[in-house]
Image 1 (cartoon, rainbow, N blue to C red):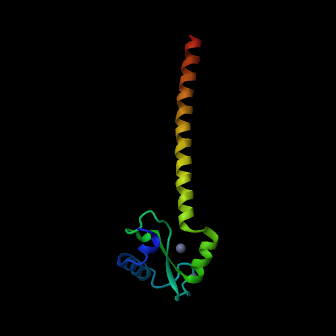
Image 2 (image 1 turned 90 degrees about the vertical axis):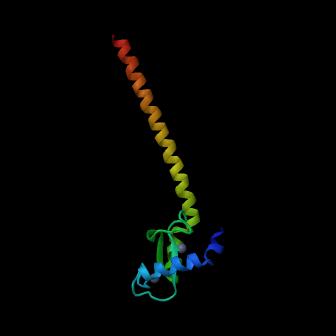
Image 3 (image 1 turned 180 degrees about the vertical axis):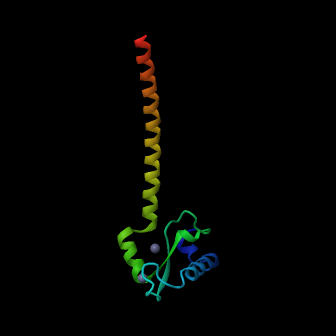
Length: 113
Ligand SMILES: [Zn+2]
Ligand SMILES: [Zn+2]
């Protein structure tokens, strides 16, 4: 389901209301901000079954500033999955290097004998 469409579902309305309630109907960046509250997704990974920690209650102004600094979540999500792939590739490379090191050590050991 497209994100825009999801935001119109009763499920999201419930999730959003619960997040606002948990936050005491206050902006997470400044408790004196209590109007124009919006619920920001820190991640889209669990869309439709968000954990409490996936959401952040922000007033419209802080929400705007937050996105100005951090970009849209969709983009940061793409960035993080790219980082995961890079980390996996580096881990793979590390394992191969370890294998080569063991092989070289074995060869050196054979030459010593
Ligand atoms: Zn947001
Ligand atoms: Zn605020």
